[in-house]
Image (tube, rainbow, N blue to C red; front, side, top):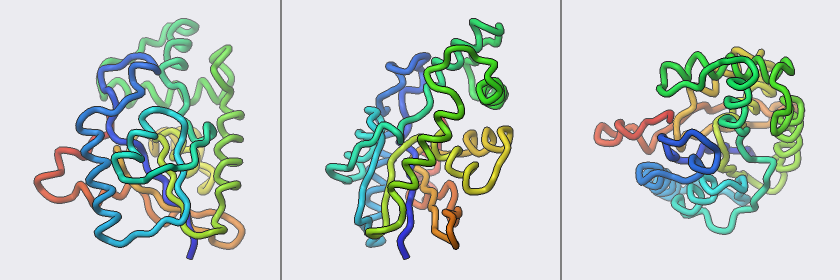
Length: 216
């Protein structure tokens, strides 16, 4: 059966505090992607169609996985979270966190403010993000064989939100859970795409690789 497998990019620059600085893989991010690519080859996983966003970390992940010449589509790009966070701080005094614990609280607050239109002049509105994700996945569809899509955690959380009817806090919890180079599969069930796999990292489950199960 045809399906869409979404892959979050490998670990990026964890010390970054802006979009441009974040948009490159760390050495570990490249290794995570190489391990995933080897796993797919070892298990003879076949993808007739290959896609990724236009961000550097997407292209680097696809390349390290051995996925050559993917179709690059800007609709598969991540939200500009650092930009939103800076606007949230400037407009509402909500400080940008410096550690994971702070980020766990900050992300749902930012998502809620963004969705409610409380962050003025964002790079895109929440509704625009929602629409581009829906349109991209609808266009990729399931005709023509299985597709693999290298993208980002925010987009994956939106895809799960749309498939499961999640509210904003639930979508934020999904986004926080997504690991680097994790796989998420959508199958057509009736007229809808439904999740049948979430946050799978079989390539990182061996004891000597569990250190590479990263979220940031």
